[in-house]
Length: 306
Image 1 (cartoon, one colour):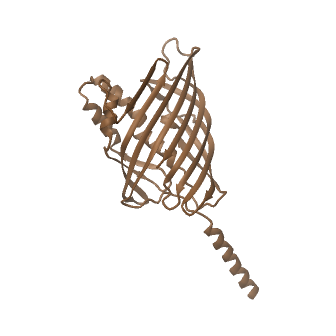
Image 2 (cartoon, rainbow, N blue to C red):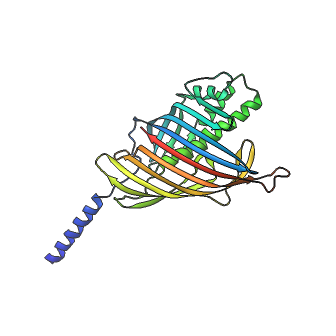
Image 3 (cartoon, rainbow, N blue to C red):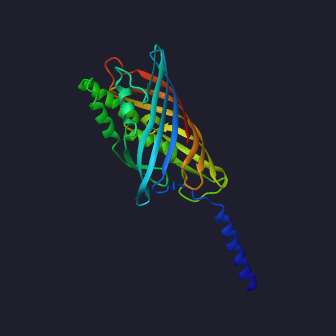
């Protein structure tokens, strides 16, 4: 009997030691606290159509502020606003940069960028990094565009469609989840792996499936590495580009490194690299373009820092 009791105590001790090594990785934000980060997205795009190659390089940067105002169930209620935003584009025979720091005459997007600073919108953020119930961001863009009296109604509609595609609610959700939808659904220890699925950048109809590994942890921070695949999903809807509808076939890979605050789970720094290639075809091809496909190669590097 004594041997059985001793064996039982040893087993309990081993289980306790094993459990103490496991971490509960999730977003555990404090109510009333403000969290910030800077994101820089560098994109290289190569397109080939009818033997003609067009290269486009873009850089998007933003400073965001998130106030955790409370909870709805287990979801954090976040009040967010931009503190800075910029977009740079370089392509053959054209370069431009738009920044919230400067309103350029005749450039309506610079007006929108400038006016959107400190404009509040709201959403819910789950402990697993998923985004829900975004409110106010699409309305904010629509209001700012309508306030620009120098634009015709047609120009307003085109500008709103362009901005919503890159910065609207759906794009914001996908881009934020590419940074925060990284947490496991169980406690993990160093060496453990888990899989998450997110959307590809800029609403391209493709899924990113990433296998994360907990590689290290100390008293302050947790370190993750990710490696995975990018692929279109059959049956996804076509995507509109400049008013035209296209079908996509994309495939590729992504790698990432994350440094998390051990207490809150907040992303301190991250680097995400996504490379994909494939082609796009007209969903409703114009006459004479039925067999035309545009070859594509995209390279994204996303850097996040506090």
